Image (cartoon, helix red, strand yellow):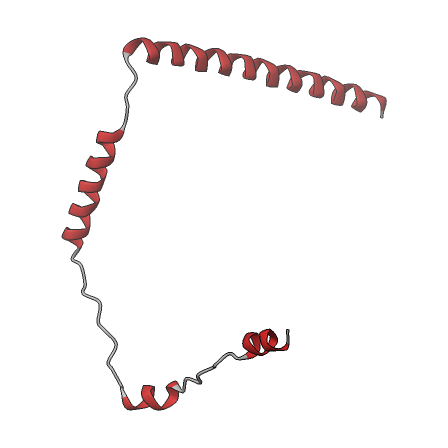
Length: 99
C-alpha cells in the first residue's frame, strides 16, 4: 500500500523557461498579404452562386398553396388585432366619459 502511494506521488515536473529563448530569437511578425477588392468581390460572387445552386425551389402548386396559407393567416391576425384595437379604444373612450 505504501509502495503504491509512492508511485502515484512520483511525478516528474520539468520547468520550462521561455524567457531566455524568446529573447534570443526575435522573429519579425508575418505580414498578411492584402487581397484586392476585385478578388474579394469575385470570391463573394462565386460563393453566392454556389449557395444559389443549393436552394430547393418549390413548384408552382406548392408556391400557390403556401401563398394562400400566408394570405389567410395575415387576414386572421389583422382581424384579431383590429378587434382588440376597437375594444381597447371603446373602453378608453368609456373611461374618459366617466372622468
